[in-house]
Image (tube, rainbow, N blue to C red; front, top):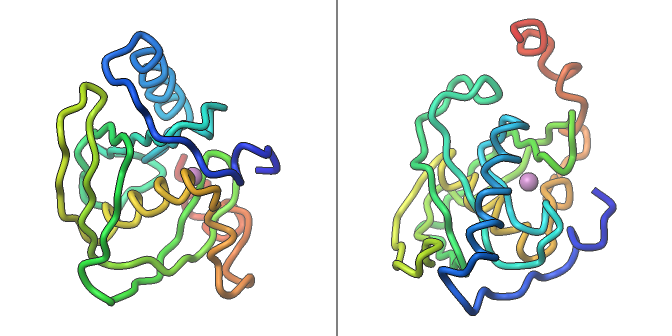
Length: 168
Ligand code: NI
C-alpha cells in the first residue's frame, strides 16, 4: 500500500496466449501461494493489466470458508445480482498484517476470459463473491481500507484475532 500502481486504473489485456501472459500468470500464482492468499491482482506485482487470479482449497488464513475454484480472470466485468450487502473481514497481500470489515454485495455474476481467451461466465455468492469484488477493485485502484465504513473495524490481524495467530 502506498505504491502509485495500486491506486491507478489498470489497462485491458489485448493479446491472449502470449509469453508475457504466461509469465505474468505464473508469477501471480507463485506470489499468491507464497503469501497464502485467496486472490491476487496483476497491479499488486507491478503489472497494470486487468488480470486477477483467485481460488481457495483449504487455507489456514481462511479456515471456515467454502472452496473457490482456482481461476484466472482477464478483463473482468461484475454485475450485482441482488441488492443485498454483507459485512465481512478482509485482508490483502498489499496491506500485510491487517484486517478490516467491508460491506460487499452478497451475490454477483462475473464474466471475462481465462488466460487462453476462453469465456468465463459465473454466478457467485458469499466469500467467493467477496474475493472477486476485492480483486476486481484492485484493477480500478481501490484497496479494501478505502471501503471500510467504520475505521474501528480495522486493525492488526494478531490483535483482532489472537486465537488465529496462536493457532499458526
Ligand atoms: Ni488485495
